[in-house]
Length: 274
Image (cartoon, rainbow, N blue to C red):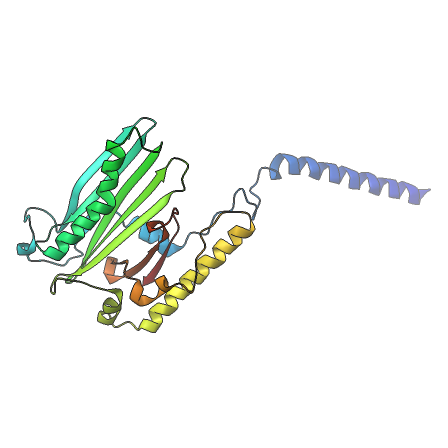
């Protein structure tokens, strides 16, 4: 008889515990994020990418270096300055926040770079505004830039995000690095030689970054996300083809793979070489 009473007591205690836990779970736990579920998983931020995104200040950063003002077209202005700015919202049509730079150097090669910058970034602003009745609505367009001087090396990078209607957002990034002494655009292969960096090391860093991105996107694809697929064997990852780069703060090299330059995606990879 005593054994039966003990068993009954044990069963009652277990039932009470189970009921209490069920109430607790429903109230407190059911609203917590579920790690690994599709609704709330976020790619882990990469520190280098976060740092890269923060440098777009729409300014010329001299970093303590001096230049001869005689190379400027307009000696009253910075070596790189905001030539065109527009902040305009047209209800239900577009939202534009654009800061577009010009390189203030009297040189034919720089003149061609400025024309390219206008063609890539300012022409899109004009297209959105002048064709507002035919613009894919809503259109959101932002443009920012930054520029750095490292001794005699001028580097400028412009970043634009474009979202048109239901189309996927695009991220467009274009960088130029120019030798003020030789009046030449500097390919990445020449830059790493100047800095005394081995090409094999740069290749390893590129492969490491792209492998990491592929691993991350593969994990997201398994969970049902639409992802941008990278091809590790693509020639775009060869050093000699990786000329979209910034020589930025403290002569750090940021090699930029902005896939939105040619596709409807905001995916990018940034390889940092210090």
